[in-house]
Length: 404
Image 1 (cartoon, rainbow, N blue to C red):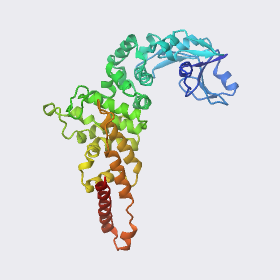
Image 2: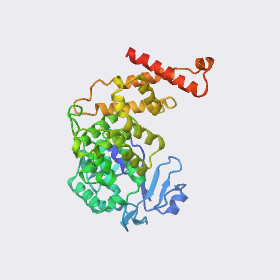
Image 3: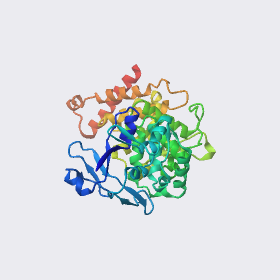
Image 4: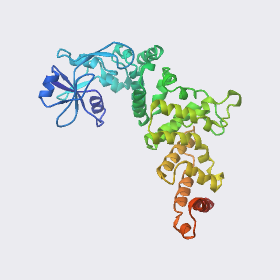
């Protein structure tokens, strides 16, 4: 039996990057032999084992044969006569189909050449057996923004989409690939590649509906709503924002896809109109409660942030309450980050001054500094205490906004 380092770990080493995980393929071994050597079996669909000391994953070399629709319908052969090349042949991209042993590179499908040339290319026609690979290629396009997707690979991706294979992907797998893509340096490429092969309409129809929808050029020099959302998303990535903020930015303008054509390029009420669409996406992808709340808040309330200088202090306090800012100040900070991406994710306006974020955060600090102790000493209690506390917070916000 012989073990080879494979996949992403080899690719990243060749790129001079530190591999996040190290995966190994074992050739010529049985499950019984792996267990006898102290490995712990964890795979249920096919034999995968954890190294007793490093925790690295070791999988028996295997082949896969399509047995139905979707990305899980495969018959697996992990017998001892499966070769390393057999195992590499079933992989998605040539840059992920290399192996290494003792410093020697095993590269039967010219993955190193594609790595040098910046090409994302499928290994074989077996690529079209797994619809998950459409999402994976798009994700790698986001990870390696200078790489081009091979035209033949794009054609196979379109064939998978047109065959209805995307409908067999589970919500969990769609979210897994999407969440990984969102935290890449140029997440927009994930959605652009999906759109190019017709997959965006299948997995994110709400986003696809934004393509070609005009906005007033006065506020949006890029005009196209889909272009704006992609610019805003990449700005959030450039600023190092977390996954929740990027997800909220992605969904913040969904309502514009439902604007009646007779009022375009205006989008009156798009923020409230987008709420049910954001809810639908969150429910479909089964995202966490906090992630859902932030996405909904940004969708419904982002125009409030932009209009903050004209808002009355009472409205500002109500906005802080709606964001749950007095209990969760981090939610206000993330809301500000998402709204900043919306403001600066516009052609030529990336470096614009946007003071509204600091204004809202200063208002939160001032309002939170109001103590209930003096009010209790003055005899306020129950509903009267709550009402007076609100008034004191409004006064505090008025003071800082006047200074600003």
